Length: 297
Image (cartoon, rainbow, N blue to C red; front, top):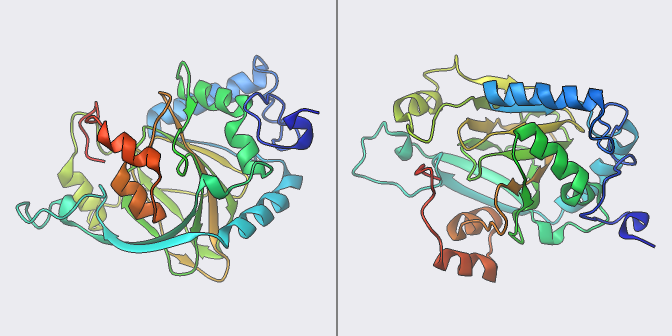
């Protein structure tokens, strides 16, 4: 009996019809006209706004199971509270006070890492499947994408209970794929500033104005619901999740892919986010090269 028959994560899986609404998103028929139209629309939104949402990606009758799995996993979350800037860098007293690299915000959030997410969960089955990678790759216009080799960061569950938030920040990779699995009672709104920086320009003045609340016209708010799949170019778009309110935590599965194989997260950021590191992180840091785009992480 194959791994698919057992309902386990399987990198060869092409048929996700027991998880995904394949009437709307026929992933097992890659040349289906409806799927091609969806991919083209996603590309347009990603090029224009750095963000695309596939509404109702998960089957309606699977929403409760993915919520239950996520709620159970959330009990194992590592929580961390620290003062961070949008770049996860240390303070530099030589910079002007209004420079965004000197604007620190309180970040409190929880994460459940990949090594604690079992192979029979729906999010793990989605993450590793060939069908999912093919969809993401085509929407992004990439020749190929890979799972993170990082033992912690490839697939994570983000947990935001009452009173927590994710302040303004960038992602370290060019794109990220997420799916909310449980919505908070209040707050927890995803906000972003499309393409506020480029590989050639950090746009410190514009970024600082957004973080200080002086410029709000660039800020877009996204109404995400459980089961929606979001593709986001978070390396160039400043973004945050507003403060969560109520007894129901905001839970979101994060699927991390990369353009190259064997990608492992940075040592210090891994320590900050997950409270621990693995040997892979220490070895990768020893041979770490500067980012090709020259941006601050």
